[in-house]
Amino acid sequence: MSFSPLVTMFYLAALIAIVASIKVVTRKNTVHALLYLVISLIAVAVCFYLMGAPFAAGLEVIVYAGAILVLFVFAIMLFGLREDETHYTPPHKGLSMWLGPVALALVLLAQLLYTINHQGIQQQLSATVIDSKQVGILLYGPYLLAVEIASFLLLSGLIAAYHFAKDVTYGGQK
Amino acid sequence: MTAIPLEHILILASVLFLIGFVGVIVRKNALFILMSLEVMLNATGVAFIGAGSVWQQADGQVMFMLILTLAAAEVAVGLALLIRMKHQYRSLDIDVLSDLKGQ
Image (tube, rainbow over all chains, first blue to last red; front, side, top):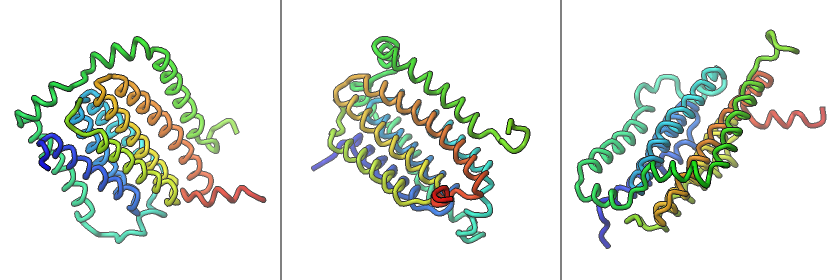
């Protein structure tokens, strides 16, 4: 049973996604888990690209690994987790905590370069790709109501986040 | 029709979903529960994109974008609630929330 290069790349990215996700749920330190979560999301984005959905892969990197993870980092900064999170882990582990995510990210980078340079994979992908034009036509045609509902959802999320995160003890209405 | 078999895409999606689900069930820290929820939503996105690419329809990517919107709103509200929880209970342990009972 021989796999084509594209399928092999997919299995490698899927393996990285699974390993990184397992690391996310098993870490003790929040920031280390966040690093692995970024790797997991980027690996899933590589899987999307190999499935012929480059638009979704770009959105995954921009929105998930960009915006949502930044939200997590800001929240962790607001929590000030020094007192109840990091004292479970040894204080000076140096670079060793970074090695795992960096190694996985380097494997993903190598995959990306190999996929871009490989002629056969590119031909296979260009035959099956679903580009952003088709998605946009569908999104603003039959799914227009869903887009409107999504915008309401985002607005309600904004208002709820503002309301809940507002500090009631200092200068609030209470 | 992609070269990747649909079964393997669905296996990847279910394995990722299972990892996230175990994280939601097992972890006590509310922040880890939110991260595990992200992993679960991501797994559903894999399933949608995989199905959409197998049948060569763009609907899967439309559904993925809606999931993305849902995840963004959910994380914003969840993190705001966690900030409030940290402010009131000085902890992110979900067990302290059961102190509400019987007091």
